Image 1: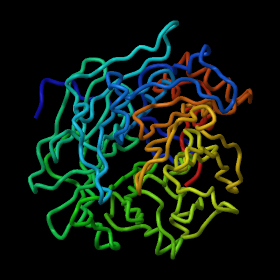
Image 2: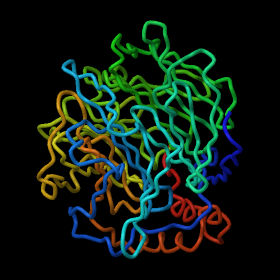
Image 3: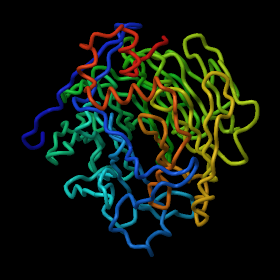
Length: 446
C-alpha cells in the first residue's frame, strides 16, 4: 500500500447558490504570476522542456507532454513527459530516450532563474497525465503498473498507492473530484475491449463505489490494437462524470444513480463526433449542466446536458485544422480552443463569439504539426486570473503565453484579497454570501 504517508487534508467550502455543492480548497494564500514575466498580449512569456535533461537530438520523437498550474498558485506548474516513435500503422511505441512519465515542478517566482524540481521516484503511466489534488500540495496520477493509483506529496516526495485492481482491469485515466472525496477511473477490461468507469472513495478503499459499463451506453469500446485514448472529468459539484474516447463518443453519468444522464452525440448533437478525447470541458460556473464540446467538423458547441439542447455554437468552423483541446478558464469567462496548427482561440460561453486568438507559430516558427491522427497540442490550461495560458506540445516543451489582461476593479480586488486570506478562511469573513462565492469561484448556475 506504499510508504508512510499523511493523506491529503480535505477542507471544503460551500456556496450560497447551491449549498449541496462543495469544493476542496488549498490552505495557503493566492500566489500571483510574477510581474517580471509580463509580456505584450499574445506573446510568448517563456518556454521550458517538460523534462529538462532531454537532449536536443531526441526531439524528432513524439513527446506526450502535460502541464498543470497548482491550485491558487499561478507561479508554479507541474509537468510530465514520455517519448514515443510513430509506427507505420500510426501506433505509438514507447521510446527509451527518457524514463517514461518523470515529474518536474517549475517555480517562476525566483528573481533570476526558473527553479526546477525533479521527482526521481515518481513514474507516471506511459501516456502521462497529472491531476493536481485540490489541496494544492499533492498530485494524483496512474503509476507505471496497470491498475496503480498514486498520490504524491510535492513537498515531501512521499507516496500513497491504492492496491492493484482485483479484477485485473487496465487503468487508462484517473480524475480527482473537486470535493477531493472521489477518484473517477477509466478502465479497460478483458471483455471484448470494453471500458468501465470506476468511482472510488479517495481514502483508497479496495472496492469501487460505482462501476458503469460504458459500452451499454453506446459503442464505447476499445480496439484490438489498443490504440484509443480515454479521458474522464468531474463536474464542478462532483455529482457527474463525463467520459470520452478518441473514437468520438462522449457520455455523462451520475455518480449517485450510476445512470447515463446524457449521451451527447445521440441526445444533443446527433450526426456529430468528438474531435479528440480532450475536446470537452465542464463550465466551472455551472454545477453540472453546461459543457463545451469541440467536434470533428471543427465547431465549438456549448450545451445543456439536462435540457438536451445547444445553448450556442460557433458561426463558422474554428479553423482549417482539427481541434486538439477545449478548456474553460478557471472563472468560466471564456473557452479556450487549441487547434492542430498551433492556433489558440478564446470564445465567449454566452454566444460563442470569438474574443481573442493568436498563433503559437508567430513566436515559434519552428513548430511542426504532428503526423497522422496524433495531437500537436496535448494540453491547454489557464492561470487562476485567466491572464496566462500554458500549452503542452508534442515536441516536449511547455510554453507560457500572455493573454489579454483583466483590468476590472472587482477582479483586481478579488485576487488582492486572496493573496492575504487563504481560501479556507474566506467563508468566515464578514461578507455577503454571494461575495464569498465570487471570491471562492463557486458555481452560480445549476
